[in-house]
Each structure stands twice: as structure tokens, then as C-alpha cells.
Amino acid sequence: MTAVAGQIRLKLGVVGKGGVGKTTVSGLLARAYAQRGRHVVAIDTDSNPNLGLSLGLSLAETEAVPVLPRSAVVGSGGSARATDLIAEYGRQTPAGPTLLSAIKVAVAGAGCTCSGHATVRSLLADALEEVDLTLVDMEAGLEHLSRSGGTLAYADLLLVVCEPTRKSVLTAARTAALAAELGIPEVLAVGNKARTGEDVAFFAEALSAERVDLAGVLPYDAAVAAADRGTAVGLTPVAPEVQRALDEVMDALDAAHARAGALSR
Ligand SMILES: Nc1ncnc2c1ncn2[C@@H]1O[C@H](COP(=O)(O)OP(=O)(O)O)[C@@H](O)[C@H]1O
Ligand SMILES: [Mg+2]
Image (cartoon, rainbow, N blue to C red; front, side):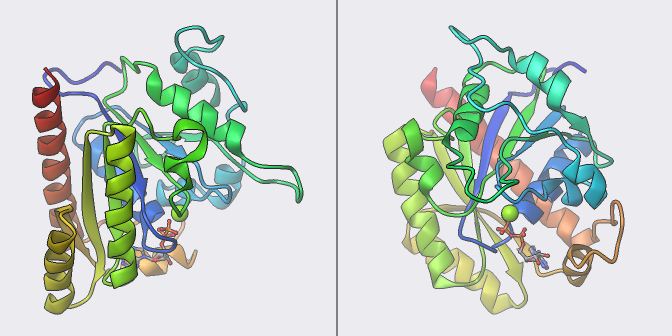
């Protein structure tokens, strides 16, 4: 598949505190972008990978996704090509995106995962000509912005997922500061699991106080939570209010990306 004409390629890192909904939001966004006709590659960097489940694979299929070779250096001077790695290790998902699994801790005491992160870093550095959106679902914390030059150093945009808690907003503020140091052009936040109007207002006020732009707010959706309990197999329908929020977030991300591109020209 070739890139959709007129659309700008986007390399997006989905980050945030543990349990805020990074994998859920990654899965929903990757699926929604694919529905807009984009060619999406979604990369799972969690050492306990489950993005495949959010993209409609079964548990067995998710566990069978081959892990990218560690320290595969892609691009200039490297031995591997992103296109070849995607062809060999990528798996098509029912939601549309191609899934790559970058890091998996299968045995205890196997050492750190730095070399897996290096693979992701070099994949992002390579120009993925035929891919419209490369989305990286990160593991929790801020280490991906410090480790060996930053797993996400070549991302165009970070989306920090927040829940209606002060701690998750503080993580967004810290992420924005580190991203600026790494030279990542744009950082936006998305509010998740909003149950009330107060939650929506909290995201707007708390993030604005930390000077982090808000791309949109996703409601708490019982169907999302139920799907994660493993009762539903495959893809579950997206509720209209969740789809509306996703459309708003995608528009905000595309606008921020276009703005960053215009500034760098
Ligand atoms: N919008 C939402 N509505 C309801 N439950 C959600 C929503 N987003 C995430 N969750 C639930 O929150 C929990 C953590 O989500 P997950 O995506 O695994 O977080 P993370 O990847 O940040 O650790 C899961 O049980 C998931 O079902
Ligand atoms: Mg996760």
C-alpha cells in the first residue's frame, strides 16, 4: 500500500503513567487512522506485550507475533531495512494496522531490554516511505526519553495519555520537558477515562496550567473495560462518543504535525 496523497507521514509515540490507557488508546487510534485510509504500523514496546489484543488478535495470535531482532540497526550504516523488517516481522491485524513486537521478556533474568529499544529508535530514524503512521505504544515511565539517546528521539510527536489524576498530568509535564530537550517537535496530551464533566474540566485546567496542549478527551467506556477483561474475542465496535473523541484527537494530532512541519521548513 502506498502513502495516501497529500498526507504527511507521522511518527507518533504514545506515552504516559502506568495504567492510564496507553495501549487502549494506541489500539483505538491505530484502528481509527487505518479506517481513514492510512497505512499504519503499530509497534508494541511493552515488555509484557498486549497491543495485539487491542487490535483484534487473539491471545495466542498476539503471543505468536515474532519479536524484532535486538539491535537491528536500520537505515544509513545499518544492515537492516525498515521495509524488510516490517515484511518479515509485521503481522496484519483485524483492525487494519500491521503490528510489530519490539520487546518481550520471556524468561526471568534475561537482562535489560535496551537493545530492543535501540531497534525501535533506528526504525523511527529510517524514512518509512510507504507508511503513513508509525505508532509506538510505549511502556510506562520516562526511561524511553533517557535511555541511550531516547527510544523516541526520532518521533515527530508524543501523545501523553492522562487519566483524571494530578499524578498523570505531572507525568505529562515532565514528558514535555524531556521531549523538548530531545528535540521532539510536538507534545500533546489526551484525557482518558473521563466519567463526568468535572473530569473533562480537570483535564483542560490542569494541562493548561502545565502548558501542555490537550488533543481531546476520551470517555470512560464500559465496553472498552469489558473487552479488556477478555470476554470479547476479536474487534469490538467503537461507541459513537468514543469515535467522536478519536476524530477530534486525530484532527488535533494532524494539525500539530502540520504546524511542526511548517515551522521546520
Ligand atoms: N477509555 C477507557 N474506558 C474504560 N476503560 C479503559 C479506558 N482506557 C483504558 N481503560 C482500562 O484501563 C486499564 C489500563 O489500560 P491500558 O491501556 O492497559 O493502560 P496502559 O497501557 O497505560 O498500562 C485497562 O483495564 C483498560 O481496559
Ligand atoms: Mg500498555
